[in-house]
Length: 522
Image (tube, one colour):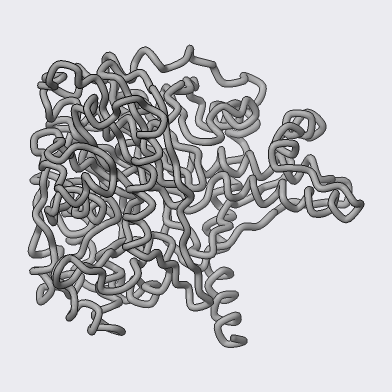
């Protein structure tokens, strides 16, 4: 239990673009936030890397920045919790020094290894144990590729961590990971432990020693070290909780679990994350071997998940196209100004006129299918179409992608809780509701990922007896009123979706041929 005068919990959320430190009071009200821009490097070979030391420096800077905004932050902090971008490989060697820059989740170099592994005889067994389809983002795939192409990296490593694990190491001196990331990559989601058969299926039995201890941050904390206290401005000994991966924490903060099995949660950020809660026993494994099953910090509960590699990145692209054209006339509209035009462009377009597949990421797609060669495209263009029609089709493509993902997990949800940077877009929310047939509730939680992590710390230090009690105060009151889907749009999208999915299936060999041709040209 927090000491007298300790009335703040800090949640750290180290995303791909921003590292945030957020202060909450013990009842979940956000007090202040501090952020530092995050950066990574991309290479022509598909690499996407991030320096470990700089990531810790930026995290510490974000915490110090929070101290500049909150009086007596160090004395008032009851606990700290950390979550971060998922997947990726953060190798640490002797003296807890980085072995190399981290391969983050956007790194696509493991694609050849993934193609080899998914065709192996033990792939289905691996999938049924982890509940997770193999893709280039994951640490298992990346380590298997390193073992085949750069074994010296693994030779120099003493432990393989994820981003949040690396930050936890710097905060506490403890090498550990959480049940969510450990089990979808190397373990069994039912037992929440490592599985030797999974590790063998990845060809990594000889690297088993690199996997850290699994700890649950709702039950276990470690004290902030003296070195970390100096770097962050917090008090030595402050309890630190290791959160689950950012997707789970964001879902928890936004309402993926409030006791309603008919509700689901979609995160509309740079990526699209589609989650539905189920009991461990009821988790559904699809025939295609795709998606994730991730442990929730609630006993007996997991979330089935499908993730689009790109969500608002598609919208950013189509708006940037218009801004570039406008800019040629001597005007340079801001992104906010372009966003402000969306509703008028939507009003000037016809629903369901053009198909758009939102696979604009250079890493391809991972949900509800895995293909590193998948690419975005328009289908159904005619001479009468104009820019508003293209914009609408991109937004509708995000709705179709969400439906595609939820369809792969079973029946469509009755209610959809939305969070993420674009969650408050009326146009996008309306399309998502009509595409899935679900009523939509928008979470008013500003920093859902940091809140989810802080909720774990609140349970760990005894402020709440369990996560359900914390959710009742931190989450449920912030869910907005439900908005029913537009009855005129629902039948249009019901007719459109089969064409969207059939085109997606038909295009897979085309994408592969195009990728092969481009590789030959390069």
